[in-house]
Length: 279
Image (cartoon, rainbow, N blue to C red):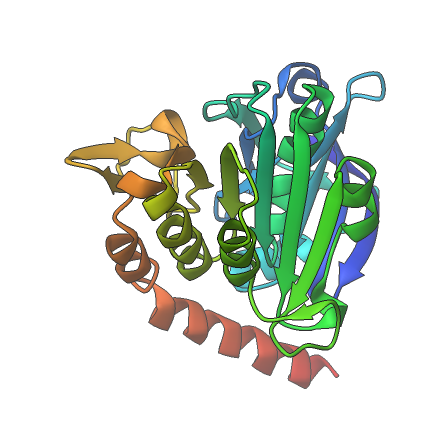
C-alpha cells in the first residue's frame, strides 16, 4: 500500500498529492512516470512524477479530475492508501547543456514540465518557460517554475491573466524577433504540441514532446499506447513518453484520444447522478 501523505488543491479540478513510494522517490528522473491504481477494481492511471523527496520517501503527483478514474483518485484524502504505484517508468528526459532552452507547458502539462525545467536550469541552460491555461484560475505552478526560469511567460486563452493567446504564438514571435533558441520542450494538449512543432520545424530547432497516449500496463505488452514516429510504430510507455516532435503523427494521436470518449462521458454522467442523489 502507498499512503497519501498530503493533498493540496491547485486549481478547480486540479489537485497535488504527496504519496509514500520510497523506491520510486529514490530512483526517478525527470520525464519519468508512474502507473497508479486506487483499488482492486480501479483503472490503471499513468501520471508523471512532478517532484520527489528521497529522504522522506515521497513522490508528488498532480491529478486533474477529468473522468471516472481521476475523479476517484481526487477524492482520496491524507491517510488513504493507493493499491499500486508502479514505476518509475519510461525513458528519462535527455538533460544536457543545450544553450537556450524554451519549455512550453499547456494546462496540466505544466506539471509534467516542472521537473524538466528544474533539471535544465541545474544543468546550466538559459531557460525560458512559457505556460498557458484557459483562464487565470487554471494556471498552476507559476511560482515554482519562476524559481528555475530565467524568463517566465504566462498566457491565457481568454486574456484574464498574462498574455492573451497561446504559447506557440509567443514562441513564434520570439523566433521572428531573432531570438536564438537551441532546444524546445512542449508538453500539454496534443493540438498545442502540434502547433509548437510546426513553429519550430522551419527553423530546424530540436523539439521534444511528451505523448499522453492511452496506456494500460506501462510495459509495452498491451500495445494501447502505440504511436507513429516517422515510419515506425513506437510504444509511449517504453520507447517514450518523449519523442521528436517533428516525427510524431499528431493527427493519429488526436483520433485515438477519441476512442473511449462516449464511455467516459457515460461514466461521468453516472457519477454526477449518484452525487446529486446523495446530496
